[in-house]
Amino acid sequence: MRFVSLLFATAITLSPLVAIAQTANQGGPLIDYGTRFIPEIAAKGMVSGPEKLASEAGLSMLKRGGNAVDAAVATGFALAVTLPRAGNLAGGGFMLVHLAKTDEQVFIDYREMAPASASRDMFLNEDGTVNKQMAYNSPSAAGIPGTVAGMIHALENYGALDLKTVIQPAIELAEQGFKVPAALHLNLRAATQRLARNEEANRIYLSGTGTAPAMGSLFKQPDLAATLRRIRDNGTDGFYKGKTAALIVEEMQRNGGLITRSDLASYRAIERQPVRSMFRGYELVSAPPPSSGGIHVSQILTLLEPFPLKELGHNSAGYLHVLIEAMKLAYADRSEYLGDPDRTAIPMTKLTSEVYLSTRRAMIKSDRATPSSDIRPGTFDDAESTETTHYSVADQYGNVVSNTYTINFSFGSGIVVPGTGMLLNNEMDDFAAKPGTPNGYGLVQGEANAVSAGSRPLSSMTPTLVFRDGKPWIATGSPGGSRIITAVAQTLLNVMAFDMTLGMATSAPRIHHQWMPDVAMVEPGISPDTVKLLEGSNHKIFRSNSTIGRVNSVQIEDGWFYGYADPRRPGGHVATW
Ligand code: GLY
Image (cartoon, rainbow, N blue to C red; front, side, top):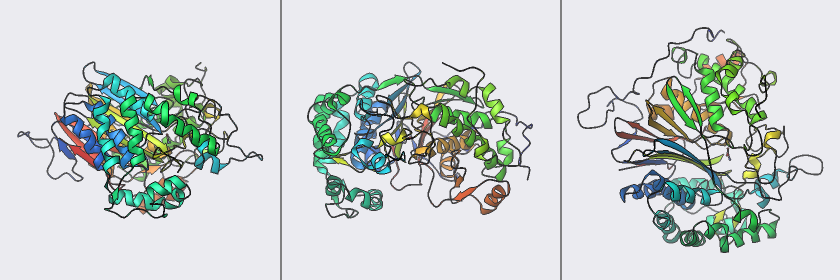
């Protein structure tokens, strides 16, 4: 079947304003009453996130005169209490901020770092195979945490309120407790086996009995409250030095982890230049290495730009064919070129250039899937020297924040550092434990991302801002490990190429392909007829019962804020003012 004429480029026009601007403004937001998946709407500010109490904690900062950074930091600390699956103090992430006053964007890298004694083969058994238990579930799986440094860096440089104020809601939630919502109960129920293996995790999350707390029961975390109070009183030193640092190091020494006092004391958040790209007149600003997110979202969108996407039809076999092929090409490059930019020369400009991508685009056949084994990472003429969480915030002053942070797997390594109430990340598995061998997300990665002391493991986290006519328009991002990139790319394509509202764009079924393994995962909701057409054209399809990403976004239109929290997981919440 011939899906699409590659030579036929659609006329490139700016999308009309989603389905919103159908009715005249009569003193309210311009939303069409008949719109499906209506977003939350606000006039003064908004936090779109994965958990209600944390979104409300962020919003409370806006209400007391704080800006979007204050709200983002308050939300980040609160999620460490209310969303232990992914919210964290002992993980890392990326925060992308649009500053209204200077009209610039700041990207804060607070990714975890490999300890000084980490080494390339540290996760290999004697026979050369990867020791998954060690890479996923042991203290050695933990990178030096970056979250506290990142949150405080953001606050001190771009916030308006002080640390005592923004961390207070988190302290209260941990100290006074909160009623276990359905989402937390379900998360814990799904993770009981893993958490029960660690005495401290079992004590805190499973009442020492191996069972999840009942929905509606009061959940207090006094150790975590004390850890938060030490941060409140001493800033970064309250985490990277003193009692918390000592407790982390004790756990490492007791159970064979690598993080030392000096690793902790030397950790710093870093500001980097974000990745910038254009798609049909919109400017995308997104995550640079050590995330692969911005580069590969940009590659996927640029590869698809000349195709008549809307004419092919959203989630039609023709559209999904070119989308899958673009994903494969992008992830093949990821496997070869991406790593910590402070250790590896990454040909960023080349990877996202139209000249390079036009040669890659030419590899997309109109009627058949190209097997992944036939796709190699691209070459250049010259060398240039799952579980995570995302929230988006916008304030009345024009500032916008897109933040994704993680402890990697759901509940990280499953190990709570005794006395701190906090779960350790297992982010070291985002390195290639053995280049060429799949990691926990099935990602095949190369030498550029081998374990190396002091490096930051390659990430897929993709906090992104889209600008229209030079003004911030959308803040978005997602959890989902390797699926983050494809979830964000599809959400953006849905809005920018298919003119969907944020609600439609977020809710629409997604697909995912990551080059290796050579299989496209499709969410329920993609038509069986479409799947058959794809299979008839050589695509290998995995009909998944699970979902791809969880996109929480804010859109700013005509002075109004529109927010949408992905319904793929329970508990998402848009706090509005
Ligand atoms: N831990 C998932 C990621 O950073 O991509």
